[in-house]
Length: 193
Ligand SMILES: [Zn+2]
Ligand SMILES: [Zn+2]
Image (cartoon, rainbow, N blue to C red):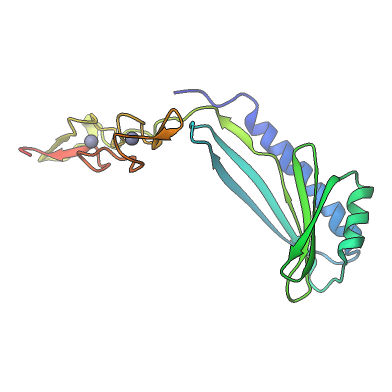
C-alpha cells in the first residue's frame, strides 16, 4: 500500500480551475457574447506499472457562433499558447496548442458549431497500484462458505494484486484476468469444495 501522493488533490483542483478559466477566456475571445455549453470530464489514467492518476478535460461549445481557425489561432497566441498544430476536423480545419503541460484546441462540428476543448496535465494520485479492498473477510462469510484458501478472501490475483501487470508485463498468473483463479473474485468458496 502507498499513501496518496501529498498535495495531489490540491494540484488537481488548481489545474482544473486554471483550465476552466483559460477556456472561458478563449471562448469569450472567439465567440463574444455567446454563452457556451460546457462539458467537464475526469478521466482515470493508469500506467502498466500501476501508477494512478486523473486528467481533467473540458469542452465548451458556443452553439451558433461562427469562428474560423485563424481567429481562434490569433486568440490562442494572444493568450500565450504556443506549439501550434493544425489538422483536419469533422467540419473543417482544426487547431491545437500547448503550454505548461496543458493542451487546448478548436474544431468545428459538421453543423458548423465551433468546439473549444482543453486538457489539463494528468495528476498522479498514487505512484503505484493499491490492491482493492478484500472481497470477503471472516465477518462477511455466509453459512456454507469459507474464505477462499488461495487468496484468503482478497478476491484478486495474488501475483499482481489485481492490476493485471507485474513490472510492466502482463501477469502470467491471471493473464490480465485480475481475479483470483480459484474463487473468481468473490473471496469465498463453498465448504467441502
Ligand atoms: Zn495477476
Ligand atoms: Zn480466491
